[in-house]
Length: 258
Image 1: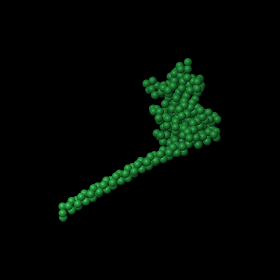
Image 2: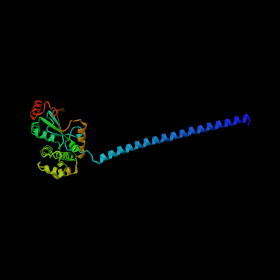
Image 3: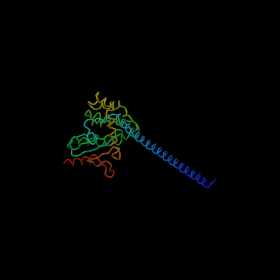
Image 4: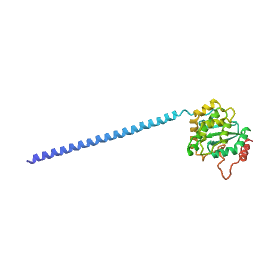
């Protein structure tokens, strides 16, 4: 074979090798584009799924029904049930759970003093309802009782029914308040409360969503527990070194009323 022929074959092999490398490079680029497109597609699908999930959450929330606050509720998001004259110079804010034993102890000790100060026009109270015992112990007595109390607010009977619930609070492990029949039975102790309208409100759970919103506000508030008692925004019930007494509460409110 002549030198010229050998050079020609060598050149042909080199051109063939170069062409193969070009084809391989094109194939790599094609695969890269396919993978990139797949990744974009997955991310796009994830975004769509996220939107669907978010919308599904909204639908589930909406399916639970709108948040229906009881009549006269006030404050941020309408989560406070007010008692007393708006002109009172002192405001007592109380976060309570109807299944909470410590809340019942507070109410039994301070009830008379609070009622006296409210009746004198010196104190207004804002009640907020929580349901932490349901979460801790299981059951739904906190929710059911809170809904019933909100129904009593609709009827203008919140204070006496609130007091009856705490005066008849079952032992903490006993979820007796989960039964609407029990709550309706206790409503019989409040004159004029046990009406068909009240009964329907209780049985329908008319304010369940509002109760859930109130408990959510309690959890986000970073409070130490129930009861949380604040006088004009200051926690006055948690200081163990200087414990609150009914006499001290009365003294603080009357001093500001002067």
